[in-house]
Image (cartoon, rainbow, N blue to C red; front, side):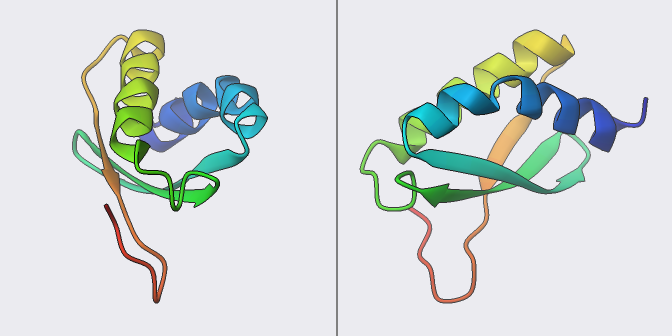
Length: 81
């Protein structure tokens, strides 16, 4: 399985938890060990979005059995906390 497919598969497996909280995290791309994601929904304006990213990152590391770092990417006109 290619790295993009591995990360996408791991991210999909924890997606129901994110959606239950009213938000989501979309995979934008992968550059080495950096995973670019876009937060949407309730996560966009949440003051705890950094905590959310760390939680998602920890779950991905656990599922992939390798270290990755999530980097938030803003959509046009959005700010990244």
